[in-house]
Length: 136
Ligand SMILES: [Zn+2]
Image 1 (cartoon, rainbow, N blue to C red):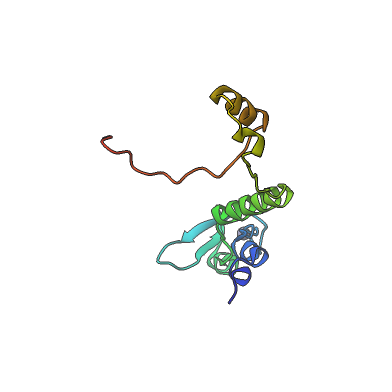
Image 2: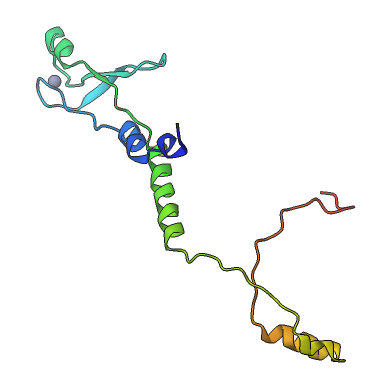
């Protein structure tokens, strides 16, 4: 299985997007939690005040699509980052060559001036290393 298959964002989004809770199938009232926990889907039923056993039984709803909005948020963040990466211009190698004319007896100041005139050069930051003798 390739990384692309493991990170099928559309499939993950479909799996983890919460499905809204429907109203009571009998009277249309809001359903309330009647069974929760044990690693099983939450069971809802009609919360109307005056219902009989038959109404209660008919209104029971096993909610299997609770999803996880945190996962959906992560998927959205990954998509934003992928979009930003796609827009980013590719990095180019910056080469600093020591010009042959500097082999003459130029002063340190002249060499530094030439380096400064090359414009900014960028590189990836060095990985963090523990400083010797530094304690927290
Ligand atoms: Zn009802």
